[in-house]
Amino acid sequence: MRVVLAEDLFLLRDGLSRTLTEHGFEVVAAVDNGPSLRRALREERPDVAVVDIRLPPDFTDEGLRAALEARRERPGLPVLVLSQYVDQLYAQELLAGGEGAVGYLLKDRVTRTDQFVDAVRTVAAGGTVLDPQVVARLLARGEARGTTAALTPREHEVLRLMAEGRSNAAIGQHLHISESAIAKHTAGIFAKLRIEPSADDNRRVLAVLAYLRR
Image (cartoon, rainbow, N blue to C red; front, side, top):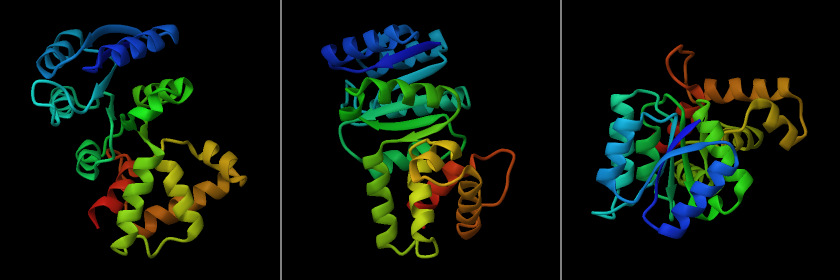
């Protein structure tokens, strides 16, 4: 699996490159700035991009902008963004298309090798991964606006785990209930958030977006 990596800190970039390589990925480009990232995404056409949100020269959202541009040119391009902090606007922009194959991970999490590698693989396979701290912050803000009032406590738990990129089977194991029970809770979440069935949209992503927008 071919990866383009963008991180301006040399030690972290080198460490992530080594980790990915050791777990069977091919790092075809490891860059430290926005223009180089744009060029690498265009020329290398990777299977997945792992991108720091803030890159030179602006150190604002250069990495995120480059990733979103690449996804417009190649719809569905898997992108895992890394950030030092939780930012609701960045998370919403990343999820806005509703297609999946995206992730938002705090940099503290990348030192946990298994979690980082699993996140890259999940995103590359078309899944959605949100750091647990990101999920907690987004859901807390949504609850403050009364957007989750219709959901039961169990449905809150299911959606929180869903947003972290876990499958129904994994959620069932975590909560110690059957996969069929999780499917029922998931259907209830979609119904209460008025997310209709669609062949084009990732309903799990839309469920998280509902917290951000309502």
